[in-house]
Length: 227
Image 1 (cartoon, rainbow, N blue to C red):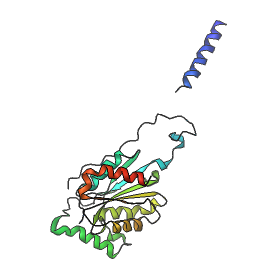
Image 2 (cartoon, rainbow, N blue to C red):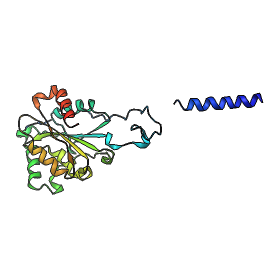
Image 3 (cartoon, rainbow, N blue to C red):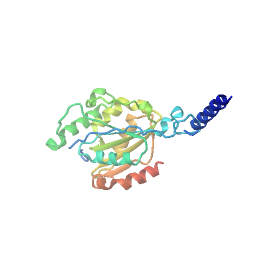
Image 4 (cartoon, helix red, strand yellow):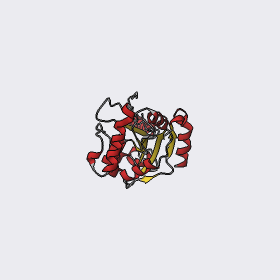
């Protein structure tokens, strides 16, 4: 009988403990680091718990896609990531390494942009980029960080959006543009052409080159605006 009560007591304690548990050219290309998802402290099966992995919602995930040559956009995106929870970063890189975009008055970039303008629906008009391994379906919002080249979005970034823009249909799209002085309407038009089904958040964020080093507050204000 004593053994029976002892076993009953042990079982009760186990149950109790379990319940408690040309404008803007971007040199120096630092490596992009995509953070791992933090451990989730609320890992139970509560359907009312939005952090429950079994009830995960991709609306909480943000993908930041950008291209940078002079590193202005890289600086902006690095700061942006510190202000967004659960954001991953993808940096677009040209397939051909070592291109000197600054040579001969940025002749390479000008030629690339003109080719896209001439035939925007032809895949061969877009410069080749390095393969990007990311599943866009895992994200419900995409933030695009774009340098401005001759009033348009930088050509390598246009390539990525041309290839994957249709996968972004129905997703929230935020746009950040870096330029020296020119307005960003051409870049906005490119983004909407390349992501025809995107739900664009307004306004876009325009950060001039001279503002890059102090971009933190500009980004914070913009994130509040787009909620």
